[in-house]
Image (cartoon, rainbow, N blue to C red):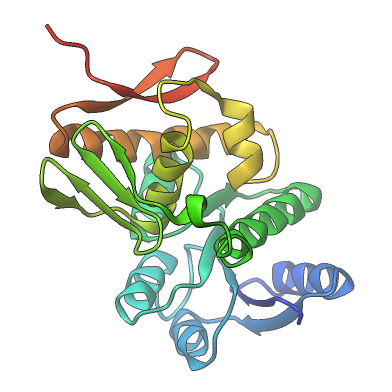
Length: 236
């Protein structure tokens, strides 16, 4: 079955380009040119992925994604926006987006990120038969439950967004091992590109703050220009 993608953007030039390109790639496409209409469409039927601008009429993209998440939508989200500041990216990711690209954009990069996102959300279903993949990981004072997307640290639940959880789980499967930045980017965003690196850094920064404020023994360590690792805090 073809993956369903909803495109929400005020600009017909963008929606026409994306619609034509994605249909040619075999995706099933719906389009909205208004924020409120887009929100209604996003919850009217299950979509695998939503691609949207932040600057929308009717309702901005940040509010749209926030409301969509509160209404129970689990669709993956990629912002494709003309707002390109670091704080803009942080706000988009904190609202519940999986990725954030800025305009102008390269179609090839967007296609790679779409493929990576859809591949990633399909992995849990493909691996259900592998019991070791679904086993709870215990590391320091932290327990990570891959089935229920739940993290307990210092006997308290850590509230993570879906992408934050998946990044933590990815690092936790190789504890005390530096995971190269390029490997993480290719796994979650599908392309080694400067904007992908910036998106990764923002996600890691947000995740690190939550881990440091919750766990007494686990940290996310950086190896400058190389990668990240989940590590036990060194005793003073």
